[in-house]
Structures are given as C-alpha cells and as structure tokens.
Length: 158
Image (cartoon, rainbow, N blue to C red; front, top):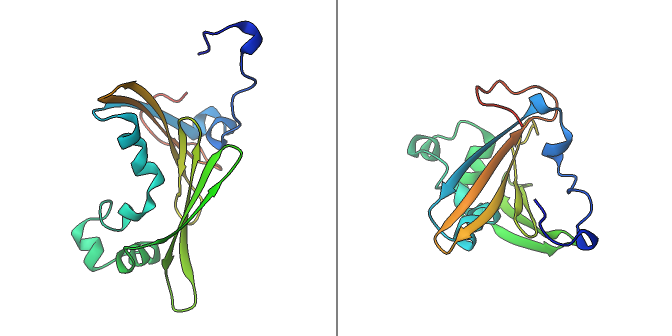
C-alpha cells in the first residue's frame, strides 16, 4: 500500500516470478516472527546454515539425495555476493563431486523481498516478504510457487 503523494507513487509492482504464475500455482502464508527485521532476513540471505540446520541427523549421516550429500559434506560454502540494480545476488558454492560444484543462489530484492534457492529440478520456488513491525517483531509473508503445475495445498491461494 502506498500512502504518499500521488506524484511520487512508485511504478508497477516488481515482476517477481511468483506473481507471474497462475493463482493456483502459488501459496502465501503470513506469520509474525519475534525478532527484528535484520535478524529475520539474515536467514534468507545466508545459505550456509542449510547444511546443518535444515537437515535431520539421519539425513546428515546418510544423505538420501545428491543435494543432501553435498550440503552434508561441505558445510563451509565459499561466497560470491554481487550487487545488482535490484539489491543483491548471493551465491554459495559447495564442493560436490570431484569435478563439480553445488551452487545455491539467493536474491535480496531491496528493501524487503527475498527468493531462496529451490530444488535442483526447479519444480518449486520459495521466497519471503519481510515487513518490519518494531524493534522486536517482523511480519513475514512466505510464498511458495510451482512454475508448471497447480499446488495441492489446503490453504487459500492469493
């Protein structure tokens, strides 16, 4: 929502992928996170924590997919951060097979949108909208989308 003067109203909304797919292919859920905006958004722009925080102990010991194996074997990615006209592109490179790397690329669209690296088959996208409430709370909109199919989620689509 824009509440300022009409002559200073921004242009069109950004053409983020989740807004371009059919309504049936996306799902938004909101929640309040009890931390400040900087603490909240840091998790989306830091891909290094997925190698331990988003994996259960069994998957760390016996990874079920190549992606899980690469996350488990290399918990210290090397970073490439590229400023862009929209914000930042953040790439985390992990060692994969002997002759290859596993890259996770996240985007930070200033001032408060993020997209997170999804599955290798690109069947799903995932992102957040981070809205500061006060020094100790952030309203979060989590969006999941499927580029090529309707989602089968029991929540309302927007």
